[in-house]
Image (tube, rainbow, N blue to C red; front, side, top):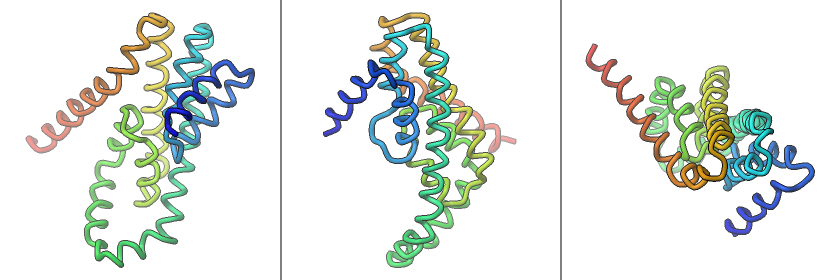
Length: 193
């Protein structure tokens, strides 16, 4: 099923309303859709490199709005369903620990997940569940999602199809390593001072 969704997403790159499809996929990918918007973003930029910045902007805006939709899912479903599940399993204390950690490190969690291959929808929903500051959520999401999509656009515009394999295979790993080093540096500074 995932392969069919992936193929469908690539097919949409040639559709006359591809920008709207990209917006919809990037919106849904931030909350419920399993295929990353990058698949369509890459195909659209390779098909028309002169539209790279507009494609990255549409993808970024769709992702940010979809992130807020995921946030609302977490916020409203936690109250309706999540509390009862935690109480049933006796995990209220563990969740409070998670909530405190998220309050302290939430900006970095959202930033890292928005830029790396970690499923962003998990973080958007978790952010709503713990009632993470929606303004900080928006800032971290805007920064990380736009940085991710504009970086891909810049690489594709500069190097074309030759860099596609590199992006698909290694960009996620390299950005994850970058955030681990960056986050580790902040932890070291905090604990050493």
